[in-house]
Length: 112
Length: 109
Image 1 (tube, rainbow over the protein chains, first blue to last red):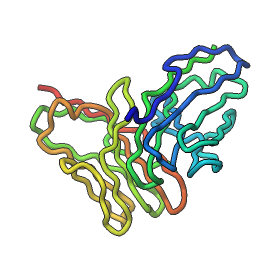
Image 2 (image 1 turned 120 degrees about the horizontal axis):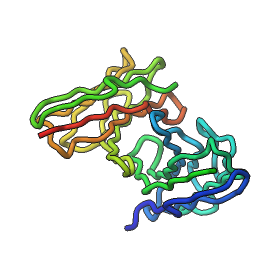
Image 3 (image 1 turned 90 degrees about the horizontal axis):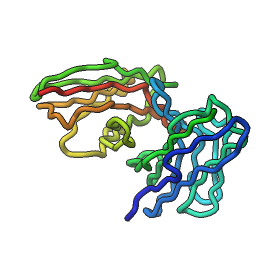
């Protein structure tokens, strides 16, 4: 099992550019989520999904879109990058909200 | 809805014990504990559910006081590998998980 994979590992964007962070899991987990981690802020939930075709907003959803067309994939789209979106992004999956979450290795994004 | 963790940082010598606390201003349904080493992803330690159920690693010990809306993580006979930042996440009812800002634990020889 590869677990949770994320691409790319590093990305630099200019303000206003858009991009998609990829996330995939091979554990047949229904629950997937995206977090951002900033220094001193802990992990903050951006969007989550409880199954294919179902997504919802988390704590800090503005500026991000998600979709879940398959159980395996949960991409995160930045619509128009801003310097405030400079952060480390983690994707995670689990059986449901109250089971162990498996985190991907993270994507370090810098917006200039 | 973010829980409050204490202490913010702690330094231990190998073999010493530590307690990390997590408290919420709202009634808790579950508390989740993760450890993150520098530059790595968070790794699951334990989940404590309302009603007493616990899921996690056998070597990790934690408590959940529903009345006080608090949880504590107990690290005994610490090893160098215990170093990292510990995060608690709390869920209140049907809401999602909100993580605290972390407790940085450093174990020295």
